[in-house]
Length: 114
Image (cartoon, rainbow, N blue to C red):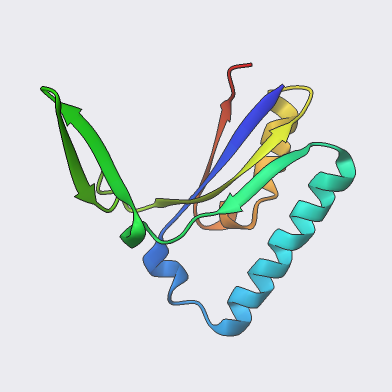
């Protein structure tokens, strides 16, 4: 079954990390990606650009409304994702707990309609 592991963290806090801390975290992400690939569970992943580059689209009464940035004001922003193909929710949760951002952000685990 496929699950989307959505990675939420506070962009403002990420910007406060030192270059060394960022490099260490990126190395942890690379190891996680390698481990997922070696397990056969990896389907895909991407890091997203900052929310300042986002555009929210809404259609109301037939009119398209565009807003800069994310739709909702939140403390944590969607920063990336992993798409995994695993046997069940328990395995998806195990992988989610290994995502480096889980230590200071939130990983949302959602099943994908097949």
